[in-house]
Amino acid sequence: MKGVSAVILAAGQGKRMKSALPKVAHVVLGKPVVWHVARAARAAGIREIVFVLGYGRDKVLPTVEAFDGKVAIQESQFGTGDAVRCGIAELSAGAKEVVVLCGDAPLVRPATIRTLVLARRRKRAAASVLTGIVPQPAGYGRVVRAPDGAVAKIVEERDADAATRKIREVNAGTYAFDRSFLKRGLPRLGDVNAQREYYLTDLVVEALAEGTCVVPVIAGDPEDVLGINSRRELAEAASILRKRKIDALMDSGVTFPAPERTYVESDVRVGQDVIIDPGVMLLGNTRVGRGARIQTGCVVEDSVIGEGAHLKPYTVITGSKVGKNAVLGPFSHLRPESVIGEGAHIGNFVEVKKSRIGKGSKANHLSYLGDATVGKKVNVGAGTITCNYDGIRKHPTVLGDGVFVGSDTMLVAPVTVGKGALIGAGSTITKNVPPYALAVCRAEEKVIEQWVARKKPELLKKAGLPVPPVDVKEE
Ligand code: UD1
Ligand code: CA
Image (cartoon, rainbow, N blue to C red; front, side, top):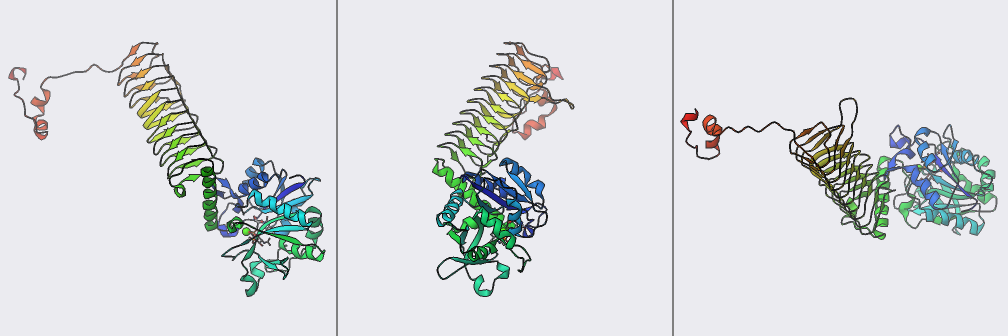
């Protein structure tokens, strides 16, 4: 939207949150509240975004950076009118229209922002304002309409009389302004009200005094106007955003057998025909390829799951990449920088850290693979451990293609096992193994005939076994 800039009000502390963190920096669906507001503005086609910051501004800066925004500082919070005055000082010369958004209202939709801008333009009005007709208007500014339906004024809850408080049409705190009107109108605002603040909402009266008006746009969905002032409202917003995200994924071809019990954060992308079971959490910058299956209890963060991969229950994956058709879990754990090859299998109680597992390789039971490079079609037996840490440094383990590692093997890194080699079960491997070799390293087995019958016959009795006659000569 050419010539349209946004000012996001985010300087307040938000006392009712009872928090050291500024209200707008609280996280909802994996992102700060104000991030959702900025994203809506950007998605509406607004390039320039000015963030008005004050209380706890450092905590809001990451969002400013994420949107390549500008910062205006409002040292003391003298009200929303004062905040916008600070904000417009940072606007570029090209900004002819200004969308003002509350940093604490993360449910605003891009389409609504566009509608607001167009509604103002169409009437060549000073401003347009988003309103919502809500069942519980308490806490919001009430929209007072003139007999002809025009907005006569907006009255804050604390300044409202009993009759005004009954009005269910509330101010969402989202507006589109003609910039020159803002410039003229803001200095005229007074602070004679219950909170001794400069109310942005008083611009309605200024517009009428100029012979123009503020065009009301009623939100299609009253939940869109929700402003977050308390932890309860934070949770409410989270649940609405979560539902919207999952609805959007279902519309794009993802199956959720129990959508109300599944948690998917804002930036997660999921391909068609993926099935996501209840109890799954997909977090951060996660991508899931077509046809994957993610079963209950899986937690996947900042990871890429390949097409057709299958995550069995309770698999936890962070910062890793899972290849096509790989099968993980139940109870697998991929720690950061793990790359699982196509069709590989990682099974129960297998932990993988900063390792590459080649195509078609298997580590199915009770293993730790850290700082390892595992080739193709390798079999890692149950209980295999890469001893990668000597107390000071981490060391690498390399297993060539087709290596067979017997169960309960300790691979003391740094160590390399050449392709096609075989490691006997129970070995502790400290030296490199050449390709195609057998390495086995265990104490020789000692068998003493009849020992139990002679020394511990009570064990046999306990097990209900007959005690064989003992050969006396051996005694
Ligand atoms: C404001 C509106 C109210 C509307 C509601 C919608 C005014 C006077 N009132 O009330 O009509 O129904 O939003 O949620 O505008 N902020 C600043 N600097 C300030 C004051 C506020 O940056 O000096 C920021 C806050 O950080 C917040 C936003 O503006 O993100 C809204 O402020 P808040 O104090 O929550 O306003 P409300 O009382 O909710
Ligand atoms: Ca508010």
